[in-house]
Amino acid sequence: MIIASQIKNMENMEQSCIFCSIIAGDVPGEVVYHDDQMVAIKDANPQAPVHVLLIPREHNLESLNDASKLDVSLLGHLLYTAAKVANQMDIAESGYRVVINNAEAAGQSVPHLHVHVLGGRHLAWPPG
Ligand code: AMP
Ligand code: ZN
Image 1: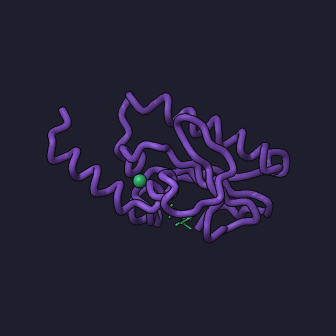
Image 2: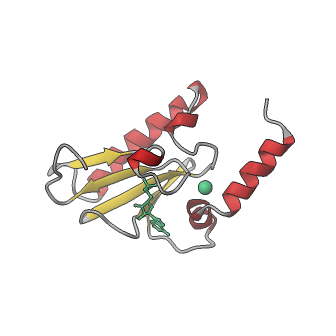
Image 3: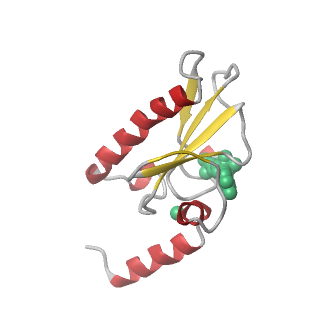
């Protein structure tokens, strides 16, 4: 059960969250796709010629670590949409990578779950 103090914490996180600010329209973002569940924007510091972030509208998952069975549909939607956006950005055939950084060692810098879609160049494996 979610208690009032947890709701307050979530509100505070949303207020200081760059992705929530972009989704609210308070901070500019280059939107390439959106639907009722998520928004896709160009990454401000692209690591490849195409670098898009798929961001759920709701700030209720900081990372995959917070996901429960209730989130399975959203998570599936994000992956399905990653392929759609890759197609839209013309990198589906040449190839692309879908990445979710989770917590510190993976380099997650924004604690609002998001999916990176990267392409438009050769992507080395293993990743750094
Ligand atoms: P991560 O390190 O996986 O948490 O990814 C966060 C990503 O958000 C990074 O690739 C940043 O370049 C990107 N980012 C941070 N601020 C902005 C912003 N205002 N607009 C677009 N992308 C951003
Ligand atoms: Zn947020």
